[in-house]
Image (cartoon, rainbow, N blue to C red; front, side):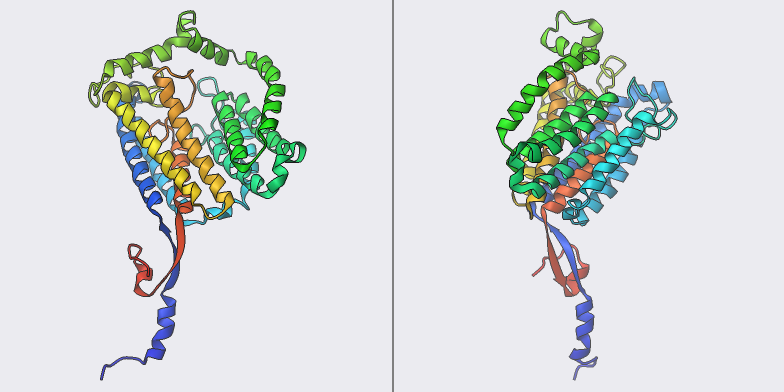
Length: 399
């Protein structure tokens, strides 16, 4: 005879060992591995690219690395929370996220300099350089546009009731970003909106008509941002452009060209020694080209292509139409930004201020990218009920 309480008394205990959890799919697991690899590689590249500036301006070669590690810690928390919380709840919070973004971007422009300082001629940050609202505006655009597309349904194919509300709200964000000024982010907001509307079923004829209407206004207003016109001129006519305008690109091409196939070696690059402006952020890709060569840049390109492939596969298998649109938008944002950055440093695209996700210095961007990845992981996961001893073992295989 076996000692112990009757079986009927064990039932409540067994029922107490029941819980729900998210189980990552194969794409989500691979996405975590790719993101972890890019983050680790990015920290190494950042240290090398920022060492000279760190010593000269702050007395420590590890100054930017240490601050970036703080961003990694915050990003890991954001990733973990996003991966565990149901991404579907973003749909009902889309308006609060959008209003908060508009308020924060407005605060950047109107608050005094001690709270919203001017850095390199632009006002983009709150609380010194701790928080950049325009970065989190990318999340607001993806979530809000996805929500409204699902809500409107077939009405989306009508111009006044379908397309105009998107143009009004995203247009407001574009104006706020342009006033900072940050034309690269303003253009990215518009691209994100256009992509999601296209995926959601909007009529292409409306885009063509509105584009034709807005083009004369855009060409007239863009003259006020002479630096943008100068950069475009330098790209299409490099020989006739002023040296100051072309300087960043010229130094970047020298760095990439001197790297050859396999690069000079880690820490052996010379162009970050005050030749390439912002070698740790806007032009960090040039450091990769110089120290890691063609192989390094090609590996980065392949890594982000894999990130994109996994993200779009997750979107295809998403639980709801809203999450499908969100997954497409988040994946597109990360991959497009990466490819634009890499295209700039090798001279294929005009110079922009877009950073390289996971690699460039910038804690707001790093936290946001890891948050994006966490949301994608949640979308690529399924909720399951685990019973018994497996309920306390996250690595167990559910029946």
